[in-house]
Image (cartoon, rainbow, N blue to C red; front, side):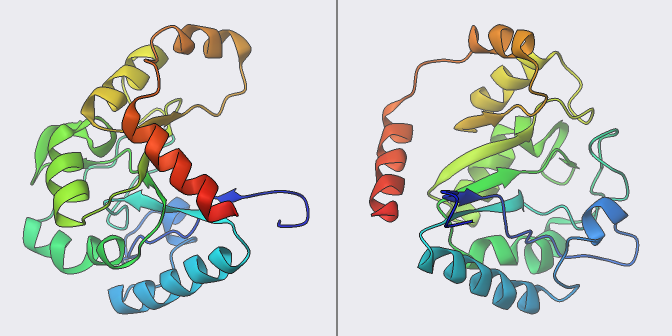
Length: 202
């Protein structure tokens, strides 16, 4: 990766797997033990850091309880705040990264209406305050069917909720043009964090 100029990788997956975790997530999880996820997550982040490659921890605040594939359907994480804090949130709180990617999943214990990507409650209360994440927050791909609005609305709602960047993966130029019309100018926070990333690369 370093030799071909890659300087960001969307790893590690810090989701804590369970017996019924959907295979789309389960096959990428380190462990069902939060402490093991933390150890392997930190190891991964530090190894990339030595090569001046930034990491994007995902899927914040935790996708491990998902029983469906968010590419096609919205996963609903039906568990208590206590369980989430005890297991799913721990790796994201412990592993420090310049970037993080949101989960297109619903957490009714915090917000019964919106997925994490579109939830100002989850982004502010959980990700920014409880987890103390200070970096750039990126949405997962806004083309995924877990998000129920148009691409432009998906992008706008993500940014309004507190995401700093939106990920659009289809490669469709016409879609890009439509989305670009609703994306605001880069704000001071993004400029500062981008500057921090450039310093990281030196």
